[in-house]
Amino acid sequence: MPLFRFGQNWDPFGDLEREVDRLLRSVDLTFHGIRMGRQYPAVNLYELEDEYVLTAELPGTKIEDLELTFAGGILTLKGCRDDSEDVPEHRFRRSERFRGAWQRALSLPERIREEDLTATFTDGVLRVRLPKGAQTPARQIAVTEGNDDPSRSEAPDHVG
Image (tube, rainbow, N blue to C red; front, side, top):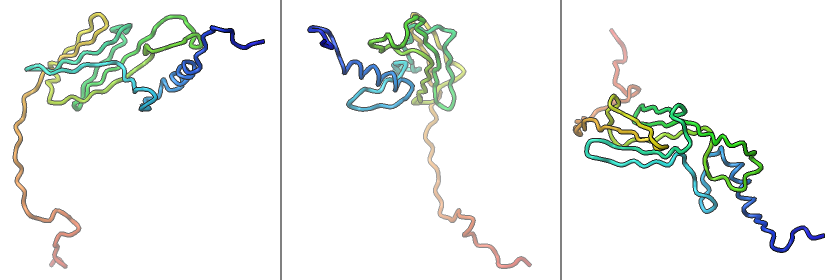
């Protein structure tokens, strides 16, 4: 009795790819040459005259599942995306759409006026406006000759 009938589609590499994807889904590693690293969400950051604008594609994400924070020049986006389809994991033959909890932190190139930061979410696209802060000019720091090592400081042998 033959295992496979003539013309039956059997893709062992596709099955292997699915299993590797399933095993590495929660691991943030990149294996160059095997699979490109996936960062979610995909973002664009561009510069205008007075601000930076960051856009992130978040299809299927609800606004109540989004959280944005900004501290120390780092913008952090957090969220959760649930497909809500009642399809068991073993039924998938290909799964490329990200689902589950995610977090992405992006360092920003210049000072940002944190108090004027705004974000809107329309049709699955998050748009964050990052107004530029005043540039502080570079200042020159005087260099003096000296010894700053306290263990090598010259102290009197005795006090008296």
